[in-house]
Every structure is written in C-alpha cells, then in structure tokens.
Amino acid sequence: MGKDERKHSDSDSSPPSRDYGDPGVFEKEAMIGNGARSSVAEAAANQKAESLGEQLTKAVTASTQALQALNAPIVLAITSYAICSSCMLVVNKVTVHLIPAPSIVLSIQMYFSALFVKALKDMRLVEADDLEWGKIKLFWLVAFAFLAGIYANMKTLQYANVDTFIVIRSSTPLLISLMDFVFLGRELPSLRSCCSLLVVLVGATGYVITDANFQIRAYAWIVVWLCVFTFDQIYIKYVVDTVPMTTWGRVIYSNAIAALPVTVLSLVQQEQAVLFSASWGGYAALLLSCLMGLAMNYSAYTLRHMVSATSFTVIGTLCKILSVLVNCLIWDKHASAVGLAYLYVCLVAGSLYQQAPMRRQKTMPTS
Image (tube, rainbow, N blue to C red; front, side, top):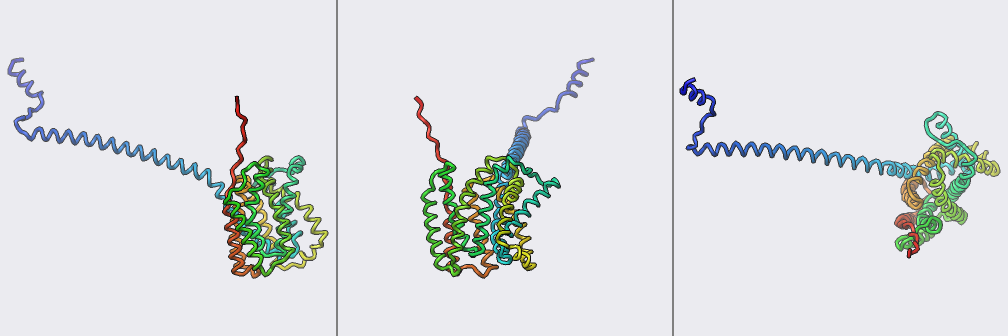
C-alpha cells in the first residue's frame, strides 16, 4: 500500500476533527457533561428516595400492624363489656319489675347460659372445658362469689332504683385498690385516690338526702352486695390467672355450679306462681336478660383475663354512666335533677383514682 493510500485510510478512520478555535465547542462539551452528570445524580437521588420511601412505608405498616395486633383484642373486649355492662343493669331491672321473682329469674338465666354454651360446644362451634371434679373443687368458690354477687345485685334492684345502686358502685375502685394492697401486693392508694373517695362519700350523702325512694332495706342489700363484690373482684381475678381454663369453660362452670342452689332458693320462696302468671312482655324481657347474661359472662371473663382487678373495676364503673342515661330515658323512678347531679359527681370522682403500682420487694444487702 502506498503512502498516499495509508494517509487516506488513516484520515477516514480518525474521529472528526474539532475546531478548538471556536469557543462554543468548550461550552457545548461542558453542557453535555453537566447534563449527563445531572441526569445520573437525579436518577440516583430518585432511586434513593424511592428506597427510603419503601422502607418507611414498610416500617409504618409493620408498626401499625403490631399496634393493631396488640390493642385490638383489648379494645374489642372493653367495648363488648361496656355495652353488656351498661345494658344488663337496666334489662335486669325491667325483668324483675315485670317478673318480681329474682331467684327464679336468676336461675333461668344461669341454666340458659350453661346449656347454650354446652350446645355450642357439642356443635364444635366453641371450645369449652368439660365438667371435671378436679376443676369443680377449684372453681366452686368462684361460682359462689359469682352467685352471691348476682343475687345481691338482683335483690338490690328489686328494692331500689338503678341510680341508688350505681352510687355505691362508683366507690368500688378505691376499695378494690385497698384490697390489692392487702392481698395482691400493691402500694397503698395515692392521695388522688383518697381524695376521690371522699368526694364519692360527699356525693353519695347528697344523693341519699335528695332520694325520694330511700329505703333502709335497699341500702342494706347494697352493703351486702358491696362486700360480696369486693371478694368477687379479687378472688375471681386470682383464679382466672392461676387456673387454666377457656373463657367459655369458665362461663359453663360459674353458671352450672351456681344454678343449683338458686333453683332450691326459688322453690323455697315459691316463686313459680309469679313466673307462670307473668305477661308476654315479662317473658320477652326474661329472654332478653338471658341473652344479655350470656354475653355479659363471656365479655367479663375475657376482660378479666386481659386487665388487672382494679382496671376491670374502673371500666365497670365508667360503664354505669351509660346505664344512668338509659335509665333516665326509659324509667320513671330515677332521682331528681339535684340527685342526678350528685350521682354524676360520684361517678366522676370514683373513676378518677389511680391504680397503685406493685410494691417493691426489699432485697438484703450483699456483703
């Protein structure tokens, strides 16, 4: 190949020449380089932002799911118990008014709960413990406390209005806190809790003065209920935490064991005639009370298992506010406006206590 041909070939394969004498060449190259670098940086930033966004979204989703998993059962249990507790008191009052035979009404409610859960268990719709002698021996005192509390409740509602009963109910949180100190190892109630109890006593005194339906017998039954209720809250919480059973199993045991003595009591008091002579409205109220009793049993045992005894008492007390509102709407034997004002003072003050923490165990110094 000749020199001219090699020169021609080299000139063809070489890149096009730049005219460096033109100042616009450098500006164009700088613009191209900056644009490329800007595009790369922007793409990297977008990718990083998307990655951070995805990580943040995943973290928020995981946190939300964890929070929902933690709180949803407790919120559902509190809501269910609040509805049942608020309605059960009024439903029982209406039932006892239409069928003035509290013993037989209570026994029917217990048989209904035990047999209904047993039927659900046989159909494999729920899990419930079978009746076993070993568990009966451990659970009979729970059934007794359950029975005594319900019976005292029914007798109280037979002789007093709902507002009267709720006043004493609002003083129970601080009383349970004292029992927590004596039996369950908690600290003494705080100054705030002690002050709330004094306000409850003042409000209850004012309510009694304005209560046109004041009856010594009614308040005597309230005192009986208060003693039984205190034992019920502390002991049942202890058994629920220490005796392994399903919630439906506790419903069967508490109702089946307690139904027998209530049946005997109703026979002794000869309340069958009152039941057979009741109106259809009374039977409808009785059926509704049975359904509410079943729901109340299940929701109460579920909530007892999740929260402390004092927290359970506080929730129950706050629920009674709804009972007062419902009672004022449908019942004609509630207190005057001044009496209701005292009642609300009692409810608010009794619910402002603070649960005492567990007592610290003293440790011996080591040498």
